[in-house]
Length: 287
Image (cartoon, rainbow, N blue to C red; front, side, top):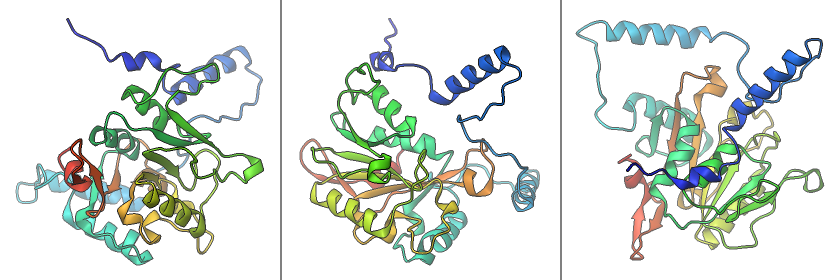
């Protein structure tokens, strides 16, 4: 008999954004005169930039000619020319020691932030800022890293780090043992940015506690204040404790096209069941 993953039964509802859309649609139908400010999924409102559509047309034209047709890539990381451009322009230009072979082009940072759990242990404890992008929590529920939810919708086994007006939406460092912490800066949903001092505090904490930071930088293109880090790798020591997720959909405006990248430094390791240090880069490259 086919067995189901019972952890899915812990989920409180469907994925948050479709649920919001359903409720908005029902409310609008019952209240046709209401002026609704939608706080669901943030989609684009303008067409794609010409640079993107022209590049897409050129790529399709290449696929239509025998002499320029390309099938599968040589490896799973993405085209080398693209990874080289990303390493040079998005990381090395900001002083980050990130090489092209540490970059993995993918079909979305949402997918990567979930799939990364496949290479982590089954008994990890995670911490999230609160409020939080729901994918971080839901995927850990489905992976079996939590207990059931309480009346407030909080899951046992997750450490919630409050980001409130009282602490200027800057969550405190964990005071309990955790293995993995999710950080998103600029933050979704609060919009808060993290200073170098804030991120340095997180890196120092992670290294001191043998913890892993999963850093979601999907909104880094919207940083305009000088001195605010666009990448956690602008912080010394981050290569040894952090994985970074990036999305092309925000800065290029093509949500739904599914194009992103993940950075896994070669110096980053995790412990096997036998206590051996295992490079996470090699495990992620097998995905």
